[in-house]
Amino acid sequence: MSKNLSPEEIEKSLSELTGWSVKDQKLVKTYEKKDFADAVSFIVRLGFVCEKHDHHPELSNVWNKVTLEITTHDAGNQLTEKDFALAKGIDEVA
Image 1 (cartoon, rainbow, N blue to C red):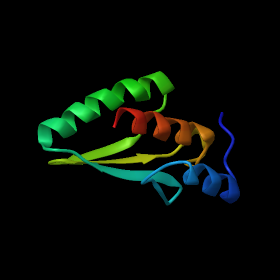
Image 2: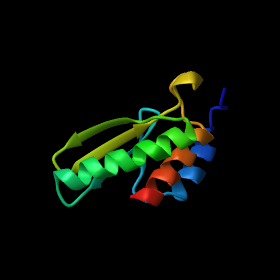
Image 3: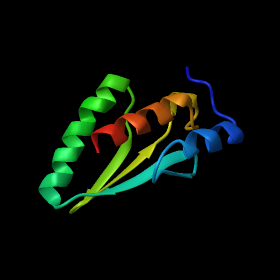
Image 4: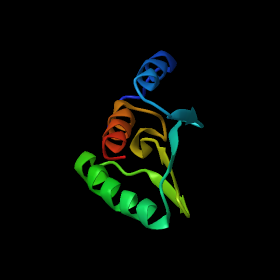
């Protein structure tokens, strides 16, 4: 199981990301793509990243917007290093 991060560790890790925020112990970000097809293509690409990290976000898609929420379920829905590593990996394919 992953170790829950302290508020200080969360702030430090969050400062290393662009465009992500924390809401209800979840990392949250919305990506805006060119159109629906581009958004769906992005979802497929990030699926491979999620499998590589063995960690899977909640996601929603409305036309060209893809919103991701990441938390560690087996850590009691708290933020862990695993969440921040996935966010970095997702940003790399975005």
